[in-house]
Amino acid sequence: MEVQKVGDISYKQFMDDFYTPGIPVVFKNASKVWKANGLFTPDWFRENFGSRSTEVKGNTYTMREILDMVENSSEGNPAPYPCIFNIPETLPELIPLIQPLNLNYARPNWMENKFFNRGYWGSATEVFIGGPGGKFPYLHLDYYHLNAWITQLYGEKRFTVFPRGQEDLLYPKPDDPWRSELNIFEPDYVRYPKFKDATPINFTVGPGETLFIPFGTWHTAYSLTPTISVAFDQLNSKNFKDFMKDVWVFKKREGTMKALAYYGYAWLAGTTCKIGDSLNGKH
Ligand SMILES: O=C(O)CCC(=O)C(=O)O
Ligand SMILES: [Fe+2]
Image 1: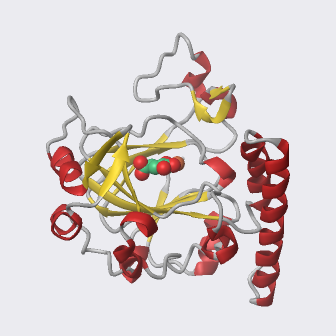
Image 2 (image 1 turned 180 degrees about the horizontal axis):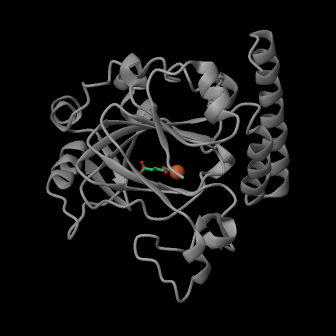
């Protein structure tokens, strides 16, 4: 199996061939609708936002420091990865450059609704910066069963995804079953023999390309060059049930009363969004 790369397919074709069956896909130029396309480069970020800062693995770095690190990164001595800037919080000037956020494909998206702007639901709109050799630290499922949309705006990143249904071969952690115990970059087949039967799909996502990762898809990433991408998450009636299960599990860690309150709020917010979709004719 491979991940297909598609050109200007219609919204309906995307829904029928990829969204509904939950198959990952790369759009070759969906990001052409974003002003960010072609504009985002390390130099542009250095010039405009050099002193903005973010925390990476417990240390605070400025944009300038991160860009210097990723430009000096190598496979043998990689810069920390991922370096993440939350767009609304630290780079709000980018918001107009990534409109429409949904790229005309990621809709409906209840995460864009004001009800889900309040509280933390595992969703964020973020810039990811990396350098050659930068590995996402673990193979994982995204928390809250959200769909992930990752648009590569500069450089090349290699992604690895697994077809759904291979959980048993991927050794989810007993205490955090959204993460795998495996280091898929250097697999230990003695400890994890079933991984031999898993069928990783590797592919490279290049400048301007957008990867859709449906909920429930195990994935990880590896930066091949200095890279800049924008990631956002999607929720709607398709993944709402699985989202609600995760709301319960995660909020339960903060106590049953809190979990009940969050669960009730999320259910009401989702139900309101669902009614909104049907009024808009989007089921
Ligand atoms: O490094 C990447 O682009 C993948 C990020 C990712 O999978 C995540 O943040 O959940
Ligand atoms: Fe992820």
